[in-house]
Length: 283
Ligand code: C2E
Ligand code: MG
Ligand code: MG
Ligand code: MG
Image (cartoon, rainbow, N blue to C red; front, top):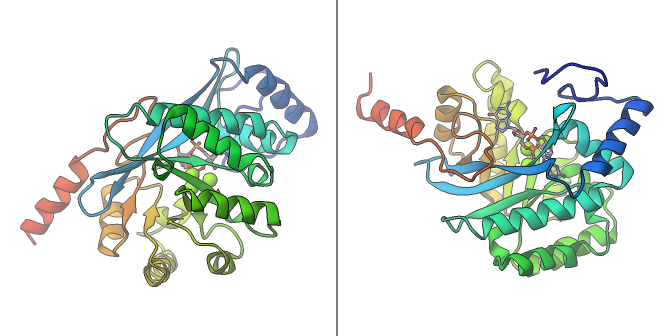
């Protein structure tokens, strides 16, 4: 998906974005300007029970609308924010804003916030999280932090400590993009998670690739033994939903159920109605 084309060229969406030095400087400069303005906003994507579609929570996703370049993908600006240290300020804003909005939702479900590895390395991180919760008057159990395995591989004592301090207060942790990283199993041994999120790439191949099916089955079995619920992310059609549901996946997320939206809204009910109708009339 190319979102726009134009002069600077850095805002094109690519799954893996590699920027050269001058492009990175551009994004850094523009992002510094954007912080604290209304160029940044959050969207919320629903997570639903795989069995009946009931709302389970929302994931907060950061959006950047540049006045000249238009929408810039997080796949572009998050890595730059991480590399330049701007993630500290950006991440703090995301947390505060996500908690503030979640406290006003009509459903008391969890808000999931993505956290970059370097944020966990910051000694002040737990206090920043507690401040955000207190300010919003949001109970800790309504917050879940999504981390990727890269955050925990070669982690320092600071990260380990942050995790245990935050968990002790009731904040949840999800292991994001599970399977896409490197040493998944040792991560699962070392840390206790409240949720695993299977990477989109496995879901997208579930109909065409028997290996993806085998891997998803194995992950679901592993999670079951560990007593951890699994969210399948990136569900784009009914066949994927049906497959995941039949394999015993706990929760689902994806465009088929609800796109990220500026306001938190209920997941679509139609996909589950269709499943129930199929079950009633076996062919
Ligand atoms: P993620 O945490 O794995 O988030 C899921 C991404 O998949 C989001 O992309 C979401 O819009 C997209 N997605 C969800 N369902 C579907 C689907 O059915 N089909 C397709 N094609 N895509 C789907 P987005 O919003 O572009 O974010 C990309 C990544 O940027 C996120 O991946 C996350 O790693 C990072 N990110 C976004 N916001 C933040 C933030 O506030 N802080 C940090 N540290 N990272 C963020
Ligand atoms: Mg995530
Ligand atoms: Mg993910
Ligand atoms: Mg990701």
